Image (tube, rainbow, N blue to C red; front, side, top):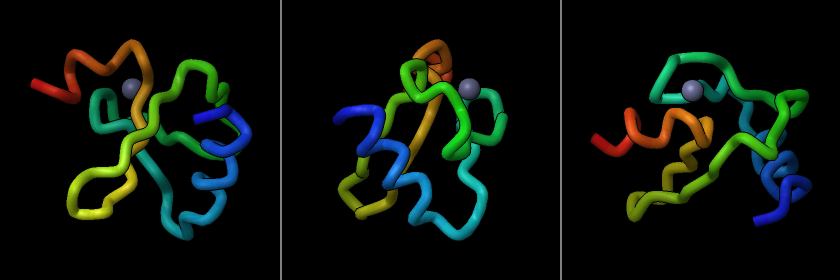
Length: 58
Ligand SMILES: [Zn+2]
């Protein structure tokens, strides 16, 4: 996914999106080159920092 597509997806969220690894908010103004995006099987959008990946998937 491109950073632009990530930004568009982020902006569709009405509530704040937080990184599950560190709890920091991720928004459309964040540096999305260091943000990963996945859609879970349940259809939930998850955004997290590349550096937090190890914490998220443990
Ligand atoms: Zn994080």
